Image (cartoon, rainbow, N blue to C red; front, side):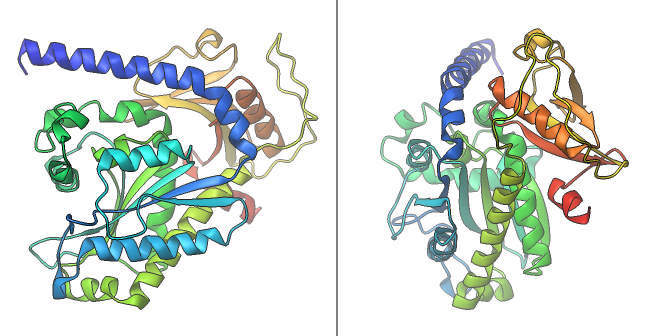
Length: 378
């Protein structure tokens, strides 16, 4: 990378970091106020119109399968109380990647779920779910490049994407900055979806992965991209092309979204009877509700690639923050207890300080486990 390119890249990163600060600073109160509103899910059917996406066995088109699955998922979700569904498209029309993100952001959505189909020159098969991330390897980059290439069909794409080149690995670098705050929630949702595909649908499990998808980069909420399966595979293409297969996949996606929604509901602290001693930042004690001495609950207040000192001045006056390195990023936790009541008080404290997306996590014998499953077993 020459010096001129590096300088431009550094300016771009600085601008994005500044933009993240502005969005975070101005958006905290809006997020807090929106907690009692409908839970908004944006469903995005990949491709459409002049862009057929991938074409597979028996001429199955990705755009058609994705749309049918999206409409069925939306139908199921619309029957749920407090859940509102927004579509990026409900017909066979072409929608640019940037416009899809704008639809989600304008709706002030809580989730963005983009649905696609895979293809390969072999009889490869299986489902996989993606969150945003810089390409970890050449294979991941190739998947993202294939989905990102749709921008070349858009009018004025050079202006809309400001020189972004879907064929260039360098263009992927920095995409995660705008989504970093939501990465953990995106991966949590992706994991829940992927578990359903493998256990309920008996699909080959290709795992939860990360790559630089432009459509995910445009959104400011937890976002995932689902590759339902390979329409170039005879058996899988036939399954996805059938009405029965589409309904089964839709039901599995619906179940995964509902598991995620219920997890958030479980992690939401209600009631106004909590009193905080803000001068000393102490958590009010409540009657003991120890779940299991081998299980420890913590509140994740933040995560990202920046290494911050776990001091109160870095976390709006909150004391007792723990920093844990996971891969190339850091997670920041508050609390360490087997008492679920106590950790809910800690979450309430974090939210009162502006960390509106703070959520409870659980660890058993040092390994992260599902909070929902822990409480069910207890």
